[in-house]
Structures are given as C-alpha cells and as structure tokens.
Image 1 (cartoon, rainbow, N blue to C red):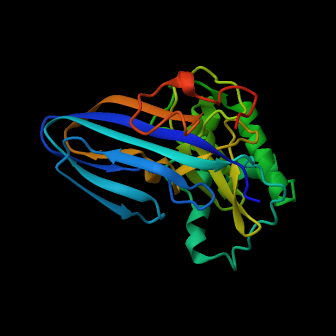
Image 2 (cartoon, rainbow, N blue to C red):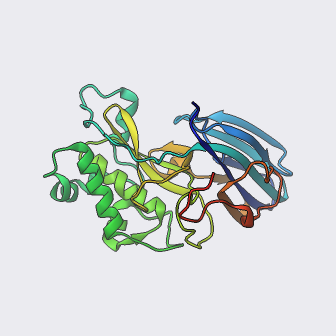
Length: 296
C-alpha cells in the first residue's frame, strides 16, 4: 500500500534592478529526492538574456543567469509531494571513525567561514565531552543551542560566525544551524548546512513572513540525520534546496555586478492540488497547514 503523501506549494519571487548586465548564481530549486517527488515546477528568469543550469560541488542544482539592464523578475513555483512521517530519526548509530570515513565527508569535519569550530574546541568538550553516545551528544548540542540562543527575527548578518553568535546569544535560523554544525565538528562529528523550505504542517502559523529555512544534518551510523535547533522538534514536509559547508555554499543568490535586490518573497504551504495550480496567485486562504491538525 502506497504511503500517504501531502502536497506542498513552494517557491519564491526575487526582483533585481540592474544598472547594466550582471551575473547571479541561483539556488532555488528543490533537490531531486525520490521520497519527495516534484509534481509540477516552473522557473521564470524574466528579461534575463541567458541562463544555464549546473551541479555544484555539493550536487546542488544551480543556475547561472545573466541579468539584463532594468528590472529582472525571477520566479520559482513548484508543487512537491511530501510524506506524512516526521523527520525525527529513531536511532542515530555511532559517530564515524575518522580513519575510515569516506574522503568526500572529511570536509564536513573542518572549520569553515561561518562554522568556526576551531574556536569552539574547549567549549564543546566542556559542555558535551562527558556524553559518550554520539546521538545523545548531538541532541544535547541541539538542545543547548535551542535553549541558549534567542531567535530574533531579522537579526541575521553575513559577517557573524558561530562562535560570535554563541557569545552574543541571539540570531536567526542560519545562526542556529551554524552553531550546531560548529559544535559537532569541534567534537569530530561530521555536520553540514542545509537550506530549503519548511511548511507549518501540524504546527500553528507563527505569523512571521515566510522565508527559506536553514538547519543542519549530522552524519551518524552511516547516514545523514536532520537536527534543527531553531525548532528542536520533529517536523513534517521539509524540502531541501541545497547543502554545503555553511551558508556561503547555500546562498539562494550570489550576485556579481551592479544588481540591487528590490523584492524578496518566499512561500511554502500545504495545498489541495485539485484546487490550486501553478501560476495561481499566492493565496494563503487556501493553505491547509498552519494549524495543529494535519489535513490530507
């Protein structure tokens, strides 16, 4: 019997005003995932004169787009099927041995621009070194970040790292992810940064504007497990866009040239695919999530 699936509408609208031509690298498409098939998808680059897709070093599907002079309206819209099961693992397994860890994963043990684990060795070992089970260690890290870092909407900065966030005590979802990742790497557990969409299936709508969401994945027992210190509870409908060392490798837009972003809108909400089609206006009165009841 086929597992029950829900339909989530995800997408974004990004406007760039350009004085002359500029180049942007976009990461906005959901990664291909057999467990979360894309039902329909449209990506429109507006007046851009050229675009090409490629896979980056982390296997993310990126687009290199040449923006035209004037207003460039980029829009992505997709219907994605998601399982009703939550993303919480029942068993995590052991931390990998560095001596036998696949070479491709060794990079996820190293300090990076925003995950400066080298500055957190002593802190991580003092707080979590007494815990011997790897899964319990990572959960303790997620619990600590969730409890000790205050979420402040719009407090994000491209200049601040995990060690600085821990010192100041507040941040946004990307900072929660960076702190979790840096602390895991400080105790030799591979961890990576993930960005994507997270609808409010089975959760009350917090009332804040929809946005891309950042979280972490940790490598235990031979597979990657979701740890999201921002919410620190099981969630349904998570849709991955990109993965990498930190936010540098997963930025939704990296701009080269005189382009100014003048509009940014993101959506991620459950819908009835028989009542909503791609191209329809974003109408949150038709969303099925944002409440405690899981509607099918």
